[in-house]
Image (cartoon, rainbow, N blue to C red; front, side):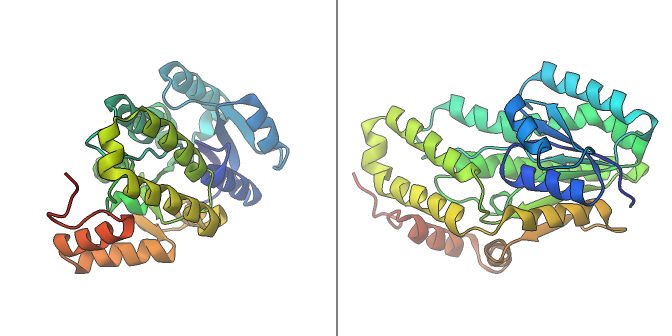
Length: 290
């Protein structure tokens, strides 16, 4: 597939930023979705004239519609050759006590926002015979305790991607899922900050039952930020997904992601549960605090 016009959401930092810059270097005309003008200027300062910052909050219907109009006018008859739905956030905590408003926020960004942008851009994707790349996670294959909202949003994104892939087959529009493991990205620092804010609002019982596990979750998030693989590796996979003659339906990125995926295939659920329990420090079956 030749280079052309591509929209990348969540391009201010992390994976989205890496994707926008890498695709720009590879000759794509990138419309980089950002929520702040200063982020757009900073991104444009590191790219060629082909990169255009695009003001876009995926949870704002008006902003999504306006972004669609902006891209439509700029792309013209060429349409879009690619859409990278990358915008996302991570929310964690015990499902027993997490406020529903926080869980809804998780799905608004990681699922409904992706669908809204896809709907806005699909006429141009069809016009340009383009492809859609949805940024999932290894958490879209294996749900970790205390990351239920995040994993749930990614599981849902995987399901939506599978359905959309089949629906768009008549027009040869590929829908591809990218599933990274631990990546060195600011999403974890933001997730830690939000987790600590949520934790302060939880009842005392949440701390009593899940305090140690929440501590370990925060530590694991810090380690993901410190030891994760560079976002550039994900960007290269996104480029392959957009440019390969016959792209895969899924790209698993990172050794930890491959191990988790393999374990999901080989181990029964309860064996996986024991592994997850030890990892976050939760008590075993029947060993919980009263």
